[in-house]
Length: 100
Image 1 (cartoon, one colour):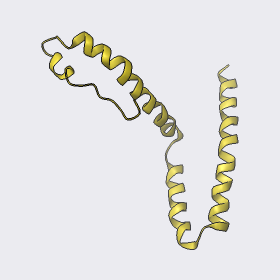
Image 2 (tube, rainbow, N blue to C red; image 1 turned 120 degrees about the vertical axis):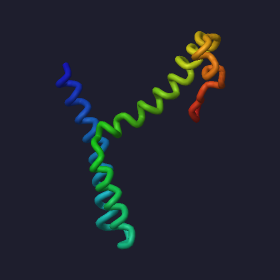
Image 3 (cartoon, rainbow, N blue to C red; image 1 turned 60 degrees about the vertical axis):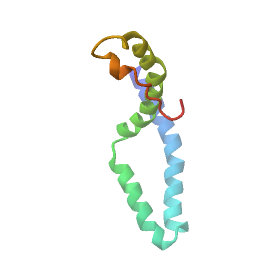
């Protein structure tokens, strides 16, 4: 089963990434002005230098932060706000990320 998931994920990545990469290559070689080719090419090379696992963590981290701020954090504030050592910091208003 893990092999099937890997193959499906790879196929989806190829279906999404191939048109984007061809579009960027076409833009850089045929459409962009000469003064813009170098900065965009450098940015694309820098994106390629970052491991893909890092990009995979960016989306879930923002979701996870919103989830914790709306469910787990209020629970612990209600549960522990009266305790002597941990209570005072928890009595402040909870951290709310943008979009909550």
